[in-house]
Every structure is written in structure tokens, then in C-alpha cells.
Length: 327
Image (cartoon, rainbow, N blue to C red):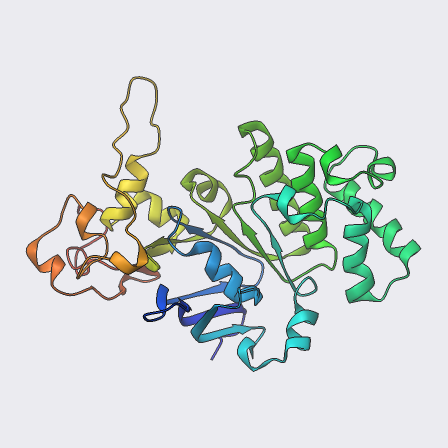
């Protein structure tokens, strides 16, 4: 059951893709909650299962994918809803900002109509009223001359402006939850900062909950209150942001932090190797083949995710009973 104040609860969810020879599990029994009005960061390398988890929440899986476990939103178990009820939820009470707006926006429709369509479908607005509101939303996301740009097609806008249009679409119905999937990956550093500042301001204004999916620890350190670190379809460590950055305990988290540039003439310490394919994971701890602290017992059985202090969870037998920061 969801506790009071919890908006989203992902409870022991595993995600599979159907294939010949046996279904492939790409996410393995992950659990996390999102409280009302908070920003939660989900961090990990490409292929760790971040985006497909967001797809499970939104109910936008491809036909060959399915999940086990339970996802609750506002106390409702999403798998119990009909297809029509899920469609009424998407874009209305929960929405998603996709990674690449150029492939998410329809190239043959104006950006104004694409924003207005959300309002016409979910709010029953007339086209004229919806277009007027779409103009206001473009102004809210700091697009200059919104009354003119509302007639533009996506290709007539820069990458940063297209991402702002995606944010305008996502917030059109004042959703309770926004899933932001790598919202700044395709943007340069200056525009990244502007878009994140904009998103954070909108989140505070409307008291929305945001799941910020990214591979950039710097983004979550400045924007998220809590962080979950994912690897190979598992949550390896989770804690409030301050604790995670001051007292990381999982070797993977430490490796990610060591990979962040510290300053001029200070060499990076990258994590060796690559993320293994879901069908070629090592026995035992799934990070053992890249871990600098590996011991023989690490390759015998996969450790459980345990709470090492209040609100701080870790999946590592070397640190499950150790105090934070002992590695």
C-alpha cells in the first residue's frame, strides 16, 4: 500500500522483452517511491533500464514487452486500469518529456497545434481556446514572440526551443507527475542549464513531482532531492542527494563519482569495461566484472538491496553492514 504523500510507487517491478528461446529480463525487481512535489533522480549508464522503466509507468511499451510487479499512481494500481483509463491518464495527470524532441514532435503539424491537441483531448477545449492557451504555455517556457512561434513547425526551431515545446506539452494539463527522460542530452551546456532552470521553476510553481532520468550526476546533484543509481536493470544504491554525494558506499556509485572531472590537470578515473548485455550478466553481483573491490564471494550470489542507515540503501556485500564512506 502507498503511504500518505506518495504519488508514485514502483513495487518490485521486473520488465521483460519477448523473444524466441525465452523472454529476456532487462529490469530486475526494482522498487522506489516518488512523493508529491519532489524531484527524484534516476542515474545510470545507457542500457541500464532507466527509460524502459519510465515507459512502464507511462504504459507506452512496445508490443513485445511486459512487466511483472505493481505500479501505483495516486493509490491506483495501473495494471488494473482499462486501456481507455490509461489514455485518459497519460498527458493529463502524468506526462513525459522525451530525450530527442525532433523525433517526438510531429514534423507536419505546427508546434502550437501539437500543444493545443493535448488540451482539446484532455480538457475538452475548443480549438481557438486551446491555441490561446498554447500561446500562454510557450510564453511560460520562455519562447520569445510566442504568438508568432506558435505557427512554426519543429524544423524551424532550434534544439533548445523544441525541448521547451516538449516541456510546454508536458505541463499543459498541470500534471501531478512528469517523467523527464534525458531532457537535456541533445543540448549544449548553456541551453542545458536554461532548460533545467525552467523545468525546476515550473515544478516549484505547480508543485509537480518529477522523475529526472539521466546519466549525468551533476544534473541530479543540483536538481534532485533523492537519487537512485541503476546498473544492469537493478538499483545499486539509493539515498537522499546530500548523503549519496558525501557518503557513497557502492563501488559503482563511487566509480561514477570518480568519473566526474575534478579540475584541470586532474586525470579522470573511469570505470573499466562496459555494461554487459542483459543476457550475458555475470554470476553473483552484476557489477563484479568491473569492480575494483571484487572478492570471490561477490561472484557466488547476488546481494540484496539493504538499508544500511535510514533512507540509504545499498546492494553490495562488502558494504551492507559497513558505515557509509568506508570504501
